[in-house]
Amino acid sequence: MTKILLIDKLDNCVERWKAAGITVIGPVHRANISVYAAVEHASEFDFGLVLPDRSIKELFFPQTEPMLRYAIKKDTIDTIECMPPSGPRIIFGSRACDASGMAIDDPLFGWDYKDTYWFQRRNESVIVTIACIKADDFCMCTSLNMEPDSTKGSDVLLRPLENGKGWLVEELTDRGQEAFTQIAEFLQESADAPAQTAVVEKKFDLEASVAWLQKPENFDSRFWKEISMRCIGCASCTYLCPTCHCFDIQDEGDTYSGVRRKNWDSCSFALFTMHTSGHNPRSTQSARWRQRIMHKFNYFPGKFSVNSCSGCGRCSRQCPVDMGITETLQEISKLSL
Amino acid sequence: MSIEQQYQARAKELLSGGAVKMVIGYGKGTTGNRRRPIFISSPDDVGRLVLDDSCIINLSGYLVSEGLLSDEKRVAVFLRPEGIRAINILAAESQLDADQIVIFGFDVNDNELRALKGIHVEEFADVIGSIRENNPGFADKELLEKIEKMTAQERFAFWQEEFAKCIKCYACRQACPMCYCRRCIVDSNQPQWVNTSSHSLGNFEWNIVRAFHLSGRCVECGNCDRACPVNIPLRLINHKMAVEVLGAFDHVAGMSKTQEPVLASFKKDDSETFIL
Image 1 (tube, each protein chain N blue to C red):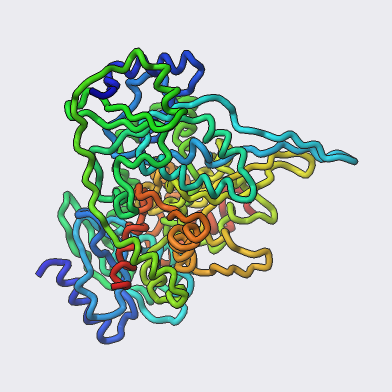
Image 2 (tube, helix red, strand yellow; image 1 turned 90 degrees about the horizontal axis):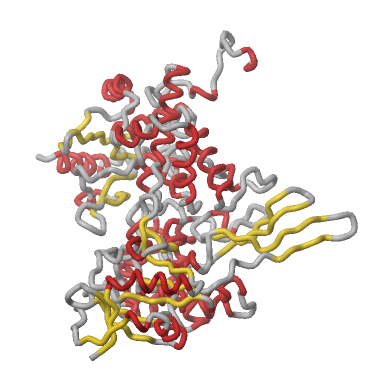
């Protein structure tokens, strides 16, 4: 006998959590797109999605947020620091790739300077992941040595029941346990079997690809130009990526007052590394695509011992010209044979 | 012989004889109905070229990639009528020499693929002319009518919701053959004309700036719309501007390579006195 949560009890849970002052967030449709967003009722959720179009990242690292307001006076500069809105949150119905993506970025945001914007949100959030029972052609978690039911970054793992009526509950952390204690009366014991998790085919040889990337001579390989020739240099892949974390700091306002903001930025843009002089060390799109791959599978693991990719596949799924990490690492896997 | 085979044979001939240095076409994509842009430089590789009704992307933007045409050699490209119009505009705006472009024209009507006869852009005048007669044509008539019926407030609310999704990835700009500026206005920061932040104001600024810059220049190929990862119906905006330009100036973009850009040209007898 194990603990289960029935779908028709979920609305009671949402109500209970909300009554306790918790914001309940999950996969929903908003204006012709699927996102993780706050809900009023459980009926708004769509658990049938392979995964939402937009990643969970923006709940921790929004596309733009104010850092401080400033006013420049005759003798002084007044600043008011801005912090993100505070309060407990439950993200119900994350996917394993999204949840693990947040855990992948923790060491980055905690390295040398501890990013209080990130960690305030991380500490106030409980991530409840639902194991995938279906995948699409772009899913690639298994190629990253993860699984559709990986627990990394999650506080609770739910396994869909075979009968489709609910989920098996596996509490993974103290925070997860606390959140589910609050809804204990809506859980029940059951011997219902969980459904088979999705079968995600391995698409490339990660170890061989990483070994190829680590060879200094391959930095100048012709491969980079060939693979990225059709790249149009937009930021669709980086902005939908749960682990891409680059940002820019911009002052908006006039000479006397304004707001300093933290905005997403992307290594795909020519402007990303443009120097004031006009010189650009990454002057071509191929150098920029190489950077993205090298960063994720060579530099990031070199520093934090983990690849900066959780296998969600959004980069390939949404690319206007059908590129992505999968194709690139597939081609590198072939080169390293 | 299928059109695909005919075009493969023509590509082989052009590449073998050195008549073109490259063929920009479509290849197989990740999934069954996805096609991706491919660049063929060797006659041995023409077998990779695919042509069917899934070939949708307008490839004309690749022609203005930095340096591609600067050696004055010819490049061949697979184009639908919208793409052919884009060549006319790029030529009229001095972005390329139309004589360097060899066109593999095709169109899809009712899921049926047909070849368009011609090599150089002026040979497609008839096909383009028929577009003018039907212009402005727009696929999603239902949504268009719905928006036209809205009050100004409702329309504002509609676009507010749509632009709220914008993440400023600039996929619309990068996918657009008409957005060829080496440095976009939003990337200029001395001075900073447009907010870089992706908040309500910044998103409105960006999308409105782009709409104005494309007025009288958009061929409605839909590249922006399809590229948008957050599904903003961007074509609606450009379509609306095309309708306005047609009404005000009797101008449909891309009719010939010598057609004057409507918002960048003037006549001494213009009725608007403020222009001179």
